[in-house]
Image (cartoon, rainbow over all chains, first blue to last red; front, side, top):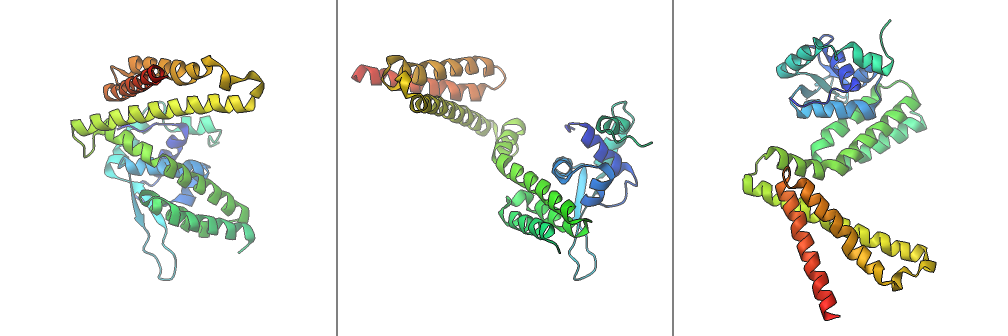
Length: 102
Length: 171
């Protein structure tokens, strides 16, 4: 599986690993990771292209515009969990971006 | 709705229509998120970042497609991959030759005092020496790893050399 694990990508993976079964929205991911749309979406697009993420349009209330949602595929979850155990994953992304939680 | 948010929405709506088919869903996704962003300027900067993503994707999509075809061979047999490789090599060589010639022509216009247009070495340098040297170096470097691309460059080198030889012979 080829995915460049930049600190930003690791942040996104971390965000998805938190309650991994739940669907997540782009703006919420942006707030959690601190990444701007110009950084976040290319990562999401690459992950989806590599079948690590599944995407879906929300079927919400009628009259309300649907939102795009994302979550790990089973393969993506395996990939993320395998990386989470490695020393470069998790905290490093936050340390590199100065976002380490206190 | 304030002006920054309205501008942001207009920009993303336009880009949804202009985006290539494979990233239209993503453009729509970024547009939909606008409704949930607190703050007018935050929405505006969200749209600017999103626009950059879509435009970058649109600009690189053809190149990415070619790269995928040559690297992974999706939907293409060996002959197809070689043809694509040779085409990339030939196209790159022609582009580079064109750029080299254009650069020297522009230099001639920008610095008329040098009288580049009338000097014999000008054509020799622009048409022959610089591009051909680059092509030969590129062919040698690429020969093992990207054989078809190197072959495409080499073919262009030979055609250009033949063209120049005929040109000088007639003159």
